[in-house]
Image (tube, rainbow, N blue to C red; front, side, top):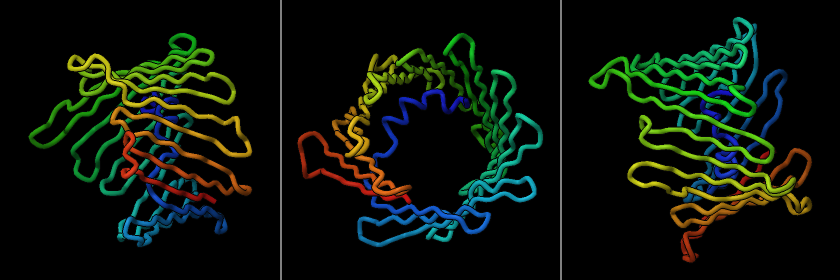
Length: 267
């Protein structure tokens, strides 16, 4: 587990699948290359697409090679020089070289902005401090410019036991703490919450939601209520083998003029 994944269980339930876009995502194989084409419709009704590929050559993994409609490109590669160590390169608007190393119960990561040589980030997480407990931290260092020096540092911990999974992570140099909770009521129903705590506000409930999978013929149902008063819900259904449809909607309070919808197909 990486430090960025320490609050993943509750975060995924409250963020994944909700959308206000209309999209189509198609995956296929062209020989040894995995091809993905993603198309999105804008509010004006125009369509824009991006096409990507994934393949390996001579031990080098091209995890993402993508061309976008605006002419920009994305490149993500990875290489495993020794067991437990993975080196990465990611280029989009910037360019970063990264390394991930796992030994025993410890996973460490690091990345360097090689385009502007402006930022160094690192993190570490220790698994199994006690049964179900993970702890870790991260920091970022600006290595050039007027703001050179330590720019951020945070810590976090997670605990899982039985049906309960919780996490606590800091933000803004330990001035704020974020708490995520996931509770599996039964095999069909799970509930999650996300709250923040600081000296300015002792408790702010960002979102509360759940997922229900007990209606197999209908699909997976998700719903959440945000602190901004927006209620969101979505339905995920496999309508054919390897063809999934997601329908999503949201409304602010009881003002249905603010209703937004999203619809996605993945095949």
